[in-house]
Image: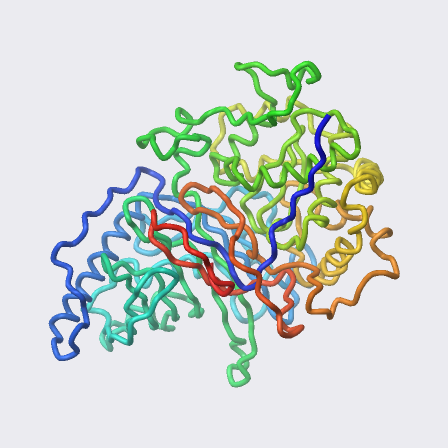
Length: 576
């Protein structure tokens, strides 16, 4: 019936996150800026101070234009935090918690950045200050959101001093590195650090530093903030890496926490529209297209009535996928989905399963999660990031496919209910794809059977390493492994593989060539403008010590900067 063909899961890479993406706004497409005809090469002569002053004035103008533009958009902002030496907190009782998570919409209509959380019924996911009972104060996403701009309202020469450092190249972009700090009489100003300004339009593409204690922030975290070039030639906020030492022991430089903040969903008005880049601004529901994407090999004669091929009908889970895509939670269909589909097809073919319409989609959030709705298997971006190889991916897909084979699904009435009017921001709380213990036990048993007949059956040891690393991290990173929309990852999805993976053949985990799991953000690239995702194309990094093996860990961002429309060039292993 089909020719069996396996497809290699893309090679891993450490300490590299997120390649070039398109990024910009939500309310309307940004207007392209004409090139500055009067632009001169700043800093060409140190003796000509007026040249540098003109350059600084141009940087200030461009930053003001960007902040004015950004006030019209409300993209999604996500922050995932990992603490060192997990401290006790009160969350429905005393639990050991080493990580935190925020998912919100960014609001820049005020004098400082603010966030509007997705509707989430779980109290530990918001209002954390009620459960945090010791110094230092609790984490607040606003403290991370403010690092998207050096100073939202007062970034100018009246409030800051600027000092040229040197020219540098970030990716493919030549930049002037400039140190800035608040002037002595600017007690309400706060940023202290370095900015990188690209050499064509004088836009800030990166800034690194902190906010002074008497400045903009209640907490003065150290951060590294990156921007992306997008439609209209704007460089807009995309990623922030934050790291801070223990405030109780600064002399030892002991790490307190590290965090990744991502921004996406600038073009949510066109979510679900496959021709969004050619559309003018308007209501996204009017532009939304059907998301039905049944595989080309589907035989209409063997589809069940629920999946009958018809131009006017679609599977009920497509309604959920579309609403989730409009809300910025699920990525549009693309190449990554096709790679997942190839692995899924390998399971279907080798098990002689004649099931049509089974497909994969990707949740854009960081927490590790997989679930099934109807015949659509959903895996989170964070999960795809950390999976070390194709065989381990196949174990996850086998569990979800088992639910499909056994007919486990929420009712079609529940799925169809998503067609009823309700705010897109509430879909976070509306999604619920939990199964009971009996269903999970049956799926575990069936998944083991599916995997045993698959082309990956001889690679069970690789999956065993992942399970071992997952178990070792479960106590430290409970939020990362907590399912928002389904059962907690690892406690159900991979249980069936535990016995088979626990063989004496399991290799030692201290081998440099044996990777059990990757760091957060190692594989999947998200385009913050369109929410399209792709596989990271950088070369693998050769490990030189066991200390570089950091499964499930937050690591710094090292994006490969390039201008929109620039030709593709080979990328080194150190950057994207």
